[in-house]
Image (cartoon, rainbow over the protein chains, first blue to last red):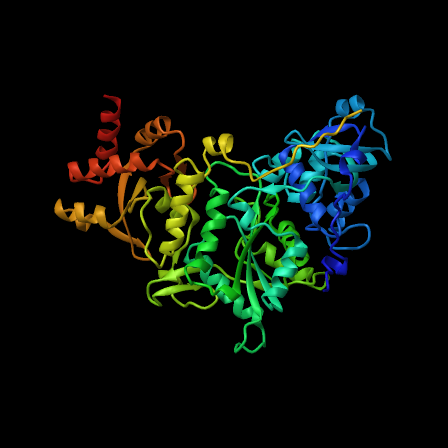
Length: 421
Length: 104
């Protein structure tokens, strides 16, 4: 099987095998927070190929200034591990040391240190996000870094065990490729999401399926839609993770997509809302999963008014020759009472009568617990979202403080007997 | 925003709510808003909006696009709907009365 990912680099897993506990004996232990743990796991399985460790100064600088890695691979977002100086001193760390990264009180991965460096956080934020405005969530995140960073390759030592319902949807990049092969998919179009699907999303996925099928005959199906949800940092008012995954899956279970054209999985990643740069990152990520096409709609990965609605599509056009994946560009979709269907800006001539699928509007309907019409949301999706609210969301399909504080973890790590130095 | 540009609360109308509106002779005040979805738009003043947000901190005012108060808990929306039904109104007195009863 061809397991070449972004820039034709092989998708390789970095997982320590055999007598792991013995190998970890005596290593200094560095506890890491959730977002770092998620990136460690994603890197270890090859989601970020060719990046397989936390970046050093040169990689960060070339990512920010030229949007590429030092080897020339297109890359848009710094992947960094910030560690406080006092922590580095406490552990007595120096270049070429190995350290054990610990999460949830269990060993997670080793980090083979290449470099320590500091970086101007304001500059990092401005170059990545095009602004220093702390209202931008990516800027806020960057400005919360300590300013001191550790670079080095990672090796996963403890594979995450995903809890229900996440376990049903978890696939590594290599497992994605195997699953596509099992379904005889030659072309796969990725749908990036953090939402439960309304009919507008469903319509976009169906339009994208035809685009991705290209000139292949349709007597036998060899094209699929991969709904790859982003599971990571949550803010109050977001949809709960469980409702997103189960709601997307309900589209296939309800027969709105046949079994042989639709699959739902997820990636551990914290959205940076970096607009065009995040679109490039998503394209790279889904290339590594084995997708051949990627949907990009209006305001992809944007936030507020920081980017123009089609900035992401413009940067993808500009960088097209550096990507293996083909972008499927989509315009804003809407419900048209004249056409009596969900359609979009590129096709429908009744702009003045269009009714937009605003996120605020859909959330308002769901908050009231009022079953939407089929033209807004499939009843099976609504039912699953509301049952997810009861089962996982403390009564709400949206993230609340209670969900943030008391939700079940996405995954657990097995405890290991490792003696720290 | 309401037709006259003011602050509003959207109470979505399902079949059960529509039956209640019909029984009260108020079905005509619900209007189709989006792809067949019916809504009762309850008007709200600036002062009442602030009072409502203070009482229900999970609620948010969308000042940029819809000028509506969102993420109001479902049971609160139920209460606002019942008050509108009782008062035969969608004016700001609905929220005023609702908040007054919650205070009492």
